[in-house]
Image 1 (tube, rainbow, N blue to C red):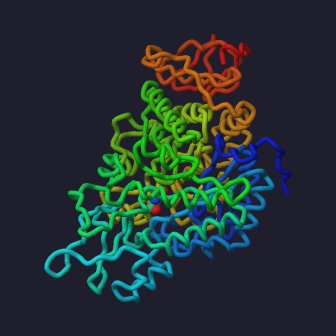
Image 2: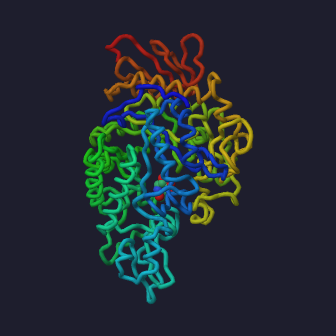
Image 3: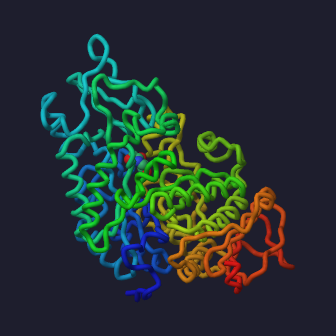
Length: 560
Ligand code: NOJ
């Protein structure tokens, strides 16, 4: 058994404020029993790897029983482990081992919708209209002469109407896939059951929760339901401002999180929450408040192209938003819902990402070397920013998107629901390569999504101990970060609008820790200071090459 390192991770109630959190997509991480699906014992077996990587916490995407209509975000039982992924005992063992390594555990909670297989929904299907069983979900009669039209024109996030009609003529709401019926959060029984779930996992030692679509739980169900002019879900998300939309970001949702906060605070240290809420910044504050969930994802960095000026304003706005909330900032470059950033950065700035995926990753051509160079620079920049960094499994290997998955192998409901106009998110969910060769590159059995033929060259085995590899860069960056990050979350800009225009972004953290990124393709003079780490080779003669980040330290406290 590997001995856990001691004491380099933050403890106490504020451990999350500047944590490096590693997102595990359990079905694609490590498969211990060879059935082709990653599992909980697989996670446990790789904790020494994660400890050595230097992360502070893991966030596990759903591992609950699920028919996988939406990659596990269709939960059939919130207080259990999918038998294909293990047992509750396996889960307890994983948490105990993670804690032994000083790694905190965050789990995903999916409160907006259940799976259609959830016992509540099955009971609702058997029960009569108007019954208490149906009151846990959102059932309505249709419009039109014979109720043949949906009750409102609301659109599903995956495409198509957000309502599904049952053989008895009634419709139910599903903001995501039809297999994911939306719960009725006006129902006290639903509220009580989720508080029970939060306590269930907290009692098992879980340190925090990532809350799926935290902004969608409450709906305005007053009759008649308000039509939204058939605008797509995405269009609506981008335009809501004031908390009165019929099903997104309603003000009343915060009553729920106030109640959840009371549950979190029953524990010592209090359990933490991080909201997944695609809302405008001034609304995000409400989710991230200490009396709410405490932190919220900020997807701005992820959405920003390769530009010093844009990123500067994103950092400023994000820090301001977090400060207003009394939370720390969060930074994300990749997750299980987006094209991996190594590939995003390999595409021309104006590339249409959906079209690129549809072309199987051939059109436009991806400049993979550039993508990796930029991705590594973006990571060092991210890890120097104040706040928590949420990293996605495989990014420490610099994995690109697996864009070539054959249509018949696609699993994401987005593909079917969008009538084959959006390929979906499978390309970032391909099981990880652990070894250079062998069955599924050391993942386990025949993988549930096909891996690219050349995956072995990017495996952990191929990168471990290799100077200059992306894995070693992450390890070194996280090791240094632990030493450099204190409790002070301040940042001071050194670069000016003018130098940023030329592509140079430069800030300094307390104790003279400088981070300089050269976004341009031309080398620039390297500022003074001791070089701690750089995302790529530095030029001779004090030059910072293009598309490279460097961490420097200056002795002069006035400089930092
Ligand atoms: C957000 C999750 O990240 C995504 O994967 C899922 O499809 C939706 N919420 C619905 O649960």
